[in-house]
Length: 192
Image 1 (cartoon, rainbow, N blue to C red):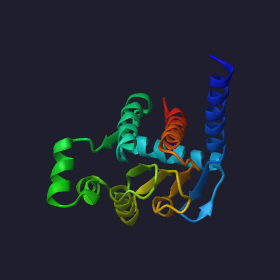
Image 2 (image 1 turned 90 degrees about the vertical axis):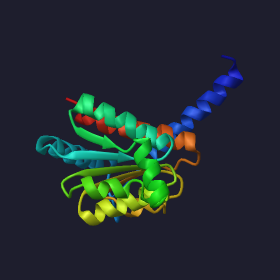
Image 3 (image 1 turned 135 degrees about the horizontal axis):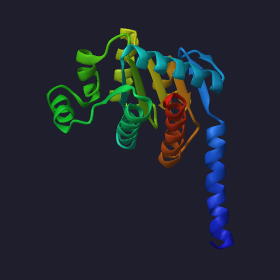
């Protein structure tokens, strides 16, 4: 690798490091909490859900949907947690066509989510209407809500969750890479 390319790569990895080191977490959508404290609370909630046989739902759009699916599988395999994602194309297109795309997660959650479950919403912008609506619904129901967002610090999802993880990523690539780090750190903490 020549010096110029290495420098560009080092700039990129430095940007990612700075982004991850700038992680901010709010608890109960209001007060800030230390990252270690927030991850410990998330771990405790997850272990309690596992022990009681409850469900963790993971949602997102595009790359965030891919992450939801990826971590749903990894949590089920490595942490022995009951997880669900909404990746059934027939369900998504039926709800989007017959009701509205902004309800593609709320509609199935109405029939499945209980106050004893957890919803993990992943969104780079934090403003995707379908994910925002699902987070609001889960919060109103009394389920644990964890949001993982980036871009603007005043995004809608960051105002909803019990735990709200936000990184100051300005690009989708940086947001998605940072979100994968957050999700892996959580999953590794609860793996058995």
